[in-house]
Amino acid sequence: MKYLFQFMIILFFVFLGEICEHFIPLPIAGSIYGLLLLFVALCLHIVKLEWVSDIADWFHSVMALFFIAPAAAVIDIWGDISDIWYYLVFLLVATYVVSMIATGKTADYFIRTNKDKKK
Image (cartoon, rainbow, N blue to C red; front, side, top):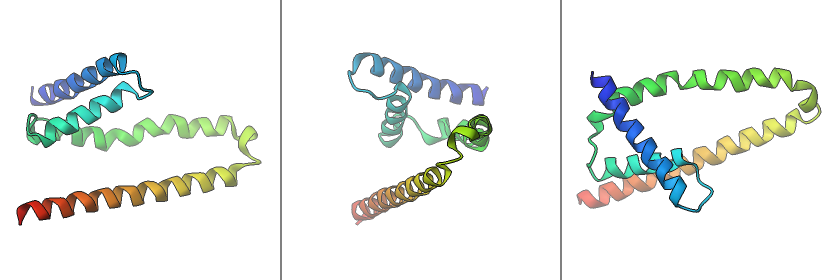
């Protein structure tokens, strides 16, 4: 029952995100709005971390399964991309590096901000 409750909380924020997508005229997916709303609710302690942590850990552990189908689809289109595969690999690596740097800088900022608040 605990997992169902946690799942329902996440689904509630996904639903709110879909509503936001309908009313906000920006090209942003409802799932992104939902994640942002859940993040804000966690930061403001409206939703306690314990209320969603177990199901979030489970989602994180099975996330790799969602990438198997796209990886297998590459085999079907290999004839189309065989001439440009090195450009694609370069773009993937560059995107990965930029994402890691942005994530690191963002985490650094929040850690520094949290330390400043404690002083």
